[in-house]
Image 1 (cartoon, rainbow over the protein chains, first blue to last red):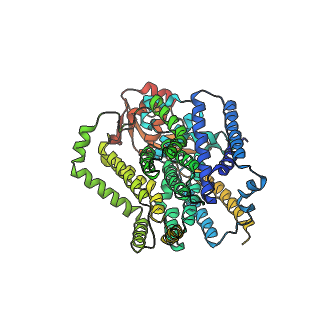
Image 2: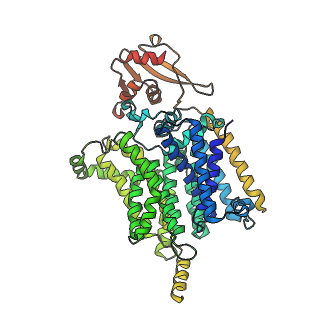
Length: 450
Length: 118
């Protein structure tokens, strides 16, 4: 039995959780540190495969990385044993789970049970061909598969964040052949806690919180996708965590923006591009809004892109030197795009597919979104406008892909539209309830008085 | 409720769900197996509907129906699409064609396929 990689992941998560901004709630801190650690290890694993490092050297690199971060953390914050103890939830003297916490834990267990009930061992087509097969190739330390034209059908241009993580955890051999399944289950649990953590920290009214949480964690269609398509939950988590982190660090407790929080934000948002190609769209639009949010403050922008740089560099290397071109962009399709955009039949099919996806799979969410919009109009909730803009731009970009697709567009839409909706749905629900008008008014009053 | 009990109890339940869940999933009929091989030589299955048997890592056996003809493999069930794409890289590039799921041509690649089968 070898558990060194899992041990390394836990150590790294603990270290990162001490480095994250103090304004984060405990749950978001935990989810963020686990997500960041997993993705950092995945990036490191890819880099070590590129240089041909053997497993021994890899282990040395992972643990050295953890030790370096720990030294950095300790030198910055003067860590004491008590602080480390406080990171363990049940050791925290102030932690008394209330009814909501316990209800959430029960819901989380039901959702996890649902995940395994619907899951397929090797995933559905995408889950198997793209994520788990690539993981299997990475496991044999073979990057040549990326450039093998005979394997184009498995979309070798897709980024390797999730396959890297699966392959890496597979090194902990006692988890055996079901590791892909459990890796995605871990993503699903992290997703659940992030959803609950952010809604709770935003002081969402209890009824609204459960109206959002129950359908998203128990929707059979989402559970089927979580257990078969695999990476859609991971990208939804990356988008959700980016917003959760941003919402909690916009202002620190002192009311000032901390520069390192931009560094972390850049890092978290950039992981989206290492998970799925759609992540590039999110990174691009989120960064644009962030430029506006910082009011073009050079120092903040610098911190943001410094945080994003490790992922961007690895991704750029992968895309420029290893991966084949994405079929959407490997030929000049501009004329075809113009023809397609003028084709009403295609528009009609896209609109009817979006509508039927909501009706067939996400009907509870139509009701939830309708209810939240009603609360917004009545002044009980305030959405984050920049969040709505980013998600609208992402969705528009997703739809535009159907006008340049080299595949049969009906086939392409039928097989992806519901998943694209899911990628943005959790973040949309959180953004719709992201500001509580009551706390907003009180903070505005405080500012006016001071 | 005592906080000291809640988190460990939750973790214990998660571990139980994972253990039971992974047993359940691994025994479910599965459309894709990454570690598989054909058991029958090709000469026995030419020109007739055949059942391909594969073994997975757990010693279980799944079956798929396909028809092998000379220079051609007809997919009877969509599931076989995945199976064949695993056995031959050359075949895989031709098999993954969305418009012709019912009948697919391997263009005389039987030597390669034969080796894969054997």
